[in-house]
Amino acid sequence: MNPKKVTVIGAGNVGAEVANQIICRELADVVLIDKLGDYAKGKALDILTSASLKNSSSSIIGTDSYNLTKNSDIIIITAGFPRKPGMSREELVEANGNIIAEIVNNIKLLSPDSIIIMVTNPLDIMTYLAYKISGFKSEKVIGMAGVLDTARFKTFIAEELGVTANNINAMVLGGHGNEMVPIIDSVTVSGIPLKQMISPEITEKIIERTRKGGAEIVSLLKIGSAYYAPAASAVEMTEAIIKNKKSVMPAAALLNGEYGIHDIYMGVPVVIGEGGAEKVIEFNLSEKDFEKLLNSANIVRQTISKLEESMSIVK
Image (tube, rainbow, N blue to C red):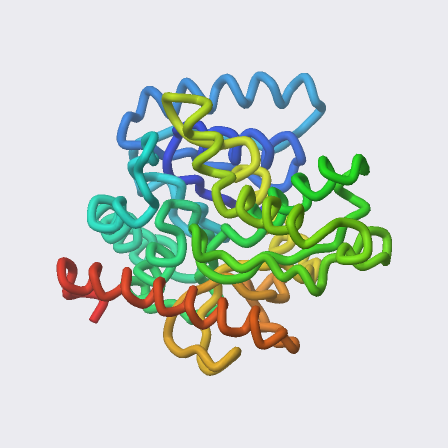
């Protein structure tokens, strides 16, 4: 049985760590592509050497040639400008939009049957742009952020309670930014509702920290942004696709009436399997959370409008 082929676009911190985890988990063979070809080749060689110490038989090559990405099964896009301290994700819209447009045009030419996982910020907007330019079915274009936001949410809850994060079931929906919506009513700790364990005041502090989790890391690093957790989140989605796990994950998917929202990408629970985002799962939200989700959708839509003003291709 031939191994799957995964292309990772962008050999920076996130892209290199994505490639490293895929190789070390022996999930697929990887093409790591970057406009700086030697840089990608160097990262790939280092990862390949590491893999030999972990008994992985997966292969990886680095390149600046899109021809080597031909017939990829999954393409993970990490390329783009990172956030700097004080910069919002939305400020990246036009700059990264131009980068994503060029990348996706190459994808649809060389890997028309692939599944795209978007990591580049602003996540929801770039995922929508990739969907529009590619012409792919919506389930084959997915945004990563919900997995990451939920992981941060669970981590901060675990720190507050003094437990391990794998005891916590939680879900963060909405746009990937300050408008994200952690769903408190659904959070349980080994089956115990979180509301029975901490006060509303502490809960609000955790929610606020979750919304600003990426910015917190950016401010601490001074140079660069988070990459270990974003990479791990993208690889979790990749594994669910390759192994057809039918995993329920929060991810940016196209909404066509679900939750009363139309024609935008935003974080919702989806079933992820070999077909990509195979199904959007709807569940009952409290009136308060539903209003927050609609507000988040409006903010995402406003940002899409800004992109449409500068890039007519998404209209």
